[in-house]
Length: 288
Image 1 (tube, rainbow, N blue to C red):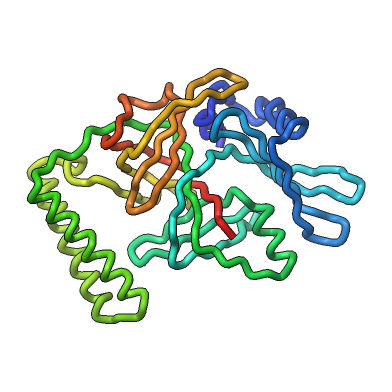
Image 2 (cartoon, helix red, strand yellow):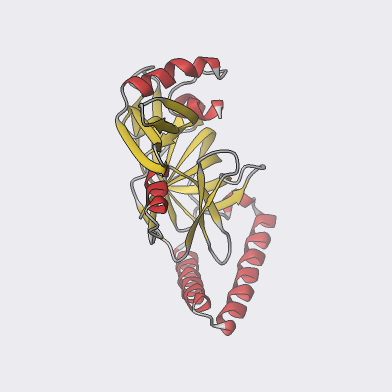
């Protein structure tokens, strides 16, 4: 987790003890404070403190009737900006603390992210209101990444890929509606696409074939190795350390992801149409 604080401009953080000063800043001057009842006289409290445009630190804990606060866990956050429409989104609680994973159930890959607006969800549960979520916004933090040039294709290849993509989207919609024939066709189409990529990669290399990809990485559920197309980019500053953070909006596997990475850890120059490659911790804000 310490390496992810680096992603929002705290590169000198090497231990938990060094985080205490940052936590005090959050406690003393939070940008947002949200509470949600969890028992008689006890509420969950979420304190968010911005340390620059789109970046900050969240503390989550409990507050009792005498206003005493006990902090349970903390995490760096990155603000997402683009809506992602989902057909099936569920939330699951972590075992060790009051934190949650959002799970977007896709027919090809279930995407998991760390829920940012924890107090909102806890409040709805306490009120016995089943949260209905049709949209979420995704962001990510990365401790290391690089910029890749766009894939060079002719017009015929572009048309073929767009046609294949539209066909796949139609099959996914039909399969979600219970069409078994569409499910079989989707399986065959996926195999054909993989074979085409494999054959092309044998002639060139995998990075000259894959526009975007998202693969689970390591043992943490919300961590992925991704390649995404850069839609927009800008630079922001951590107002406490003055370190520069690169913010890129990526298109990755039909998802928009707002990625934040310390400029010291990014290899290459970002540009619209170029690709980002790296390992990211995926977060999400769910619109209940």
